[in-house]
Every structure is written in structure tokens, then in C-alpha cells.
Image (cartoon, rainbow, N blue to C red; front, side, top):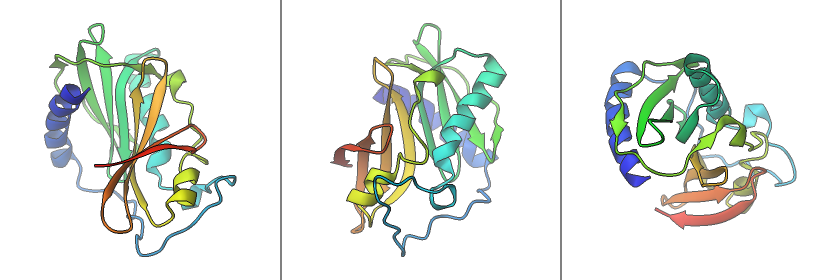
Length: 185
């Protein structure tokens, strides 16, 4: 997966920077923390919009390419969503950017991809709950992105966060926000 990320991210990063002048969304205010009880859903206006963008980006790719696509990764942040579509029996990837609700033209195909894939139906996280464990267990951390990766049996959800002291964390969560692991990066 690391090789796919390196190849596709480099191509997509260059293309998106030119195509994306920013987002109309405001960046979350990291001076204020909103603690949410892990049993309570995070209201739409309290969660970052990119949590929902994963689903919208997958729908846009499948509208463009047809249903039943396999994906290596989908990563969403406040600026855009990257979608890495597995092609050629999952030996290559085509990267798409989903920016401000619009699917952008694909980046060139990257050969040499490898790793587990997932389908749209494997993305089962609840957008209202996926952040709840982090906001409860790590209330002063800022979630900067959500990634969905193939794990061989479905999908794994990883939140990228900045800790209250400035460190970076990868937080694996379950579909209802339960924190499964926290790793410094």
C-alpha cells in the first residue's frame, strides 16, 4: 500500500494543487474543543463535512465508471477527497480528486499498485458516530482527515488527527467510532 500511496499521491497532489484553489468550507477552529459523548451522534453541523465526502466521492466515481468498482483507498480532508480506484486486476490505480462536490478528471494510471481493495458496500461507518470515540477519548485533538483502506475482508477507517500538543496521530476506529488503536506518526 505504501508504494501505491507514494506513486498516486505524488501525481494527484500535483494535479490537485493546480485545480484546487481552496474550499468554501472553513477550517475547524482548533482553539475550541467540543467534547461529544461517545453514545451520542455528532450532529451534521458539528462534524467536518469531509466525513460525508467519502460517500459522495465514491458515488461520483461509480457514476462516472459504473457500479461495482474496487478501491484501494479513499481519503478526505477539508480541501478535497482522493479516490484511488483499483484497475487491471488491482495491479494499477487511477486516482481521482473530488473537490467542492465535483469529480475531477483522473490522474494518469499508475502501474505497480498492490494491496487489499474494498467496494462501496464495504464502507459501513456511520458519519454521525465515526468521530464520537475520538471526541470522547481525545477531546483536545483535531481530526484533519478520514481514510478508508481495504483490509482483505472489507474496509478499515483511519482518522488523521493533530493532538493538543501538536503531535500527529493515526487513529483506527470502528464503524460507530469506537477507538481501536492510536499510533503517533
